[in-house]
Length: 105
Image 1: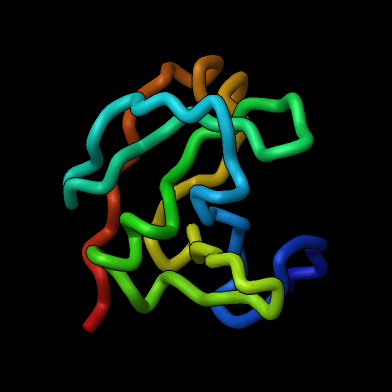
Image 2 (image 1 turned 30 degrees about the vertical axis):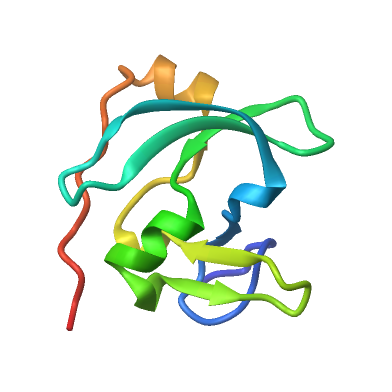
């Protein structure tokens, strides 16, 4: 049972993934479906994370993208089958590009 905090909304795991909310963006590689996998820092923050950009996800898996009331896009990492983690966690676990599960149609 998910008693977690966070983005809320359908699909769970929805993270603020709009490129306009991020800075210090560095491409780490490309996933199987062509999506870029990036290191980035949220505006106003200092912690580096790894993940995708909503604008790219929208072209590959639009069902995983929602637009929140604030006008920014969010990505459901659960629907993509991707972990959402800090850059430090990613490096500590081997810095491997994750595999994307095929989009369900």
